[in-house]
Length: 179
Image 1 (tube, rainbow, N blue to C red):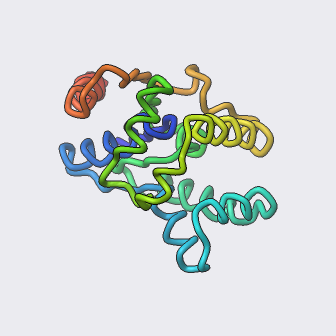
Image 2: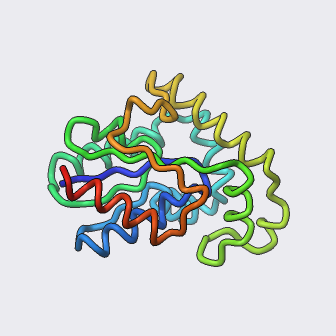
Image 3: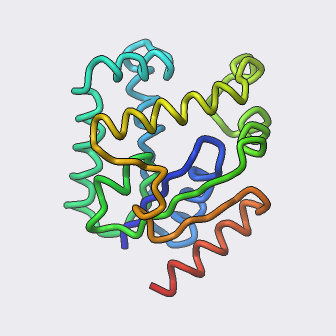
């Protein structure tokens, strides 16, 4: 089984994806991590890469093609990707994780496992997070005619606002194993 996990920033998508991969003994892929490595190799911050992607869609195409190829060549993996539900729609079980804006903000600024520097975290506002959501959503509609917030694109929707990471994993695992 291929599983894609999409969600808003700070909702717990990476935590869920990594935990499910470990529990199911599946490979784990993250487009966000791939983008960070790509940005670093070019001497860019992730924010600078996002700006560049908005002007040069060939960069998006590389990440898109990567996801499609995985879906064609591998049969058991977890993909943490905003657009995984689009590029793997015919071959994957698709999960969307939602969470309240206040809780997402709290998680982002207190996350000790993320690649964001402590200095950057102190500068992030809730408005920044909402702006990124809106920009990503608009971009997905323009580039792909795909609204990744649309619940009809997913097999499972999880609101992680009042759940611990372990509770989210158990909930998702129970649903997945019933498929």
